[in-house]
Image 1: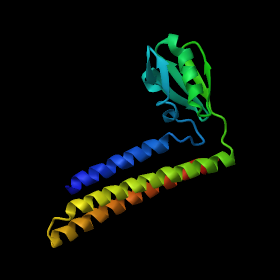
Image 2: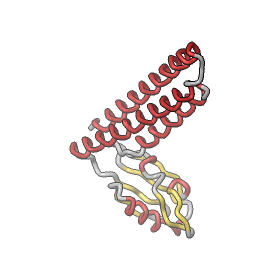
Image 3: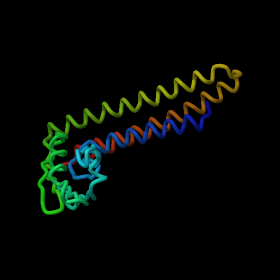
Length: 176
């Protein structure tokens, strides 16, 4: 296993973690909160981001400008069924989603959720490291030790990035 392959796997793992954390609601509206909500339209299930343009004009408001006015009710129903704590309201060709303010208790629950997702990300990085070390076993001892040192540097950088992402998200959640 080449170190560039290992680095690419770690970057994919970090990107996955960032995406998971972006779907956790902080104090302000963010289109990523609802863009992956699945809606039953056109005899299939589609994410909202494929059905309209999502924007956040205010801190506690998301607006979906729907491209086909006939599916507004389906979008409202999909958001309600997603049970994500957002109240949708249908208008002429758009859906307004109001986000209630987060309580301190809810903020603390979300921080715990962030910590769980971050730990899962760390476990993925450790698993990548373990897989890489197995691939190094048949190498000569001097090459093996050099590769392991380089591998550890990659792991350390990935863990530092995970810590930074985690700290930023926690600070964002606790900001009133």
